[in-house]
Length: 201
Image 1 (tube, one colour):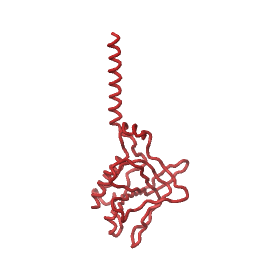
Image 2: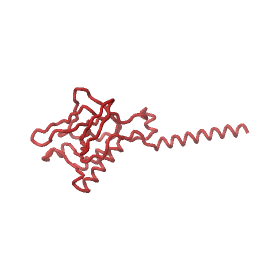
Image 3: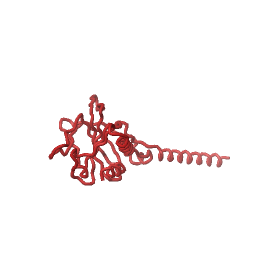
Image 4: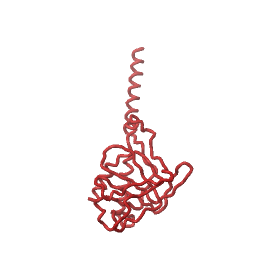
C-alpha cells in the first residue's frame, strides 16, 4: 500500500512537471504592447536611395495593396518580440518587455542606412500623435524608427521617437534621424528583414 502511494505521488509530480513544461514551451512572452499599427511606413536602404524621395513609402490612403503591406510589416514586427516562456525562463528574460527611455539633453541618432548593405531602417508614421510615458513625463510623437538586419537571434533594439523628421529630398538629405525619447526591447528581426528586403529588391 505504501509503495502504491509513493508511486502515485511520483507519477503525479512527473505529470505536473510535464504539463508545466508543455505550457511554458507554448506560451509566448515579451510581446510589444507599446507600438500601434502605423498609418504609413517608410523604408530606407541602398536599393531605394536613387528614388526622388530616397525611400519606399506605403500609405493607407494609397489602396488595399499598401494597407496589406503595412499590416504584414506590422504583424511581422510584433512577432519579432515574442519568445516562448520556457526559453525566456532559461535566459532570465521572463520579466523583460519594452521599456521607455530618455537620452537626456544630448540627442542620439539612428542611421537611415542609405549606403549600408545588409541593414534597413523602418519608420512608422502616425497621423494621430502617440504617447510615450517615461517616469513622470509624457512625450507625444508621430514617428517611430528602428534598424533591422538579417541576424537570426534576439538582441537589443532601440526605437527612437519624435514629432517630426527632416525631409529626404534633395541632393544631400540628412543621413540620420535624431531622438531624445525611445523604446528599448529585445527582438529578432530576421523575418521582418526578409520580408522588407523582398519588397525593395
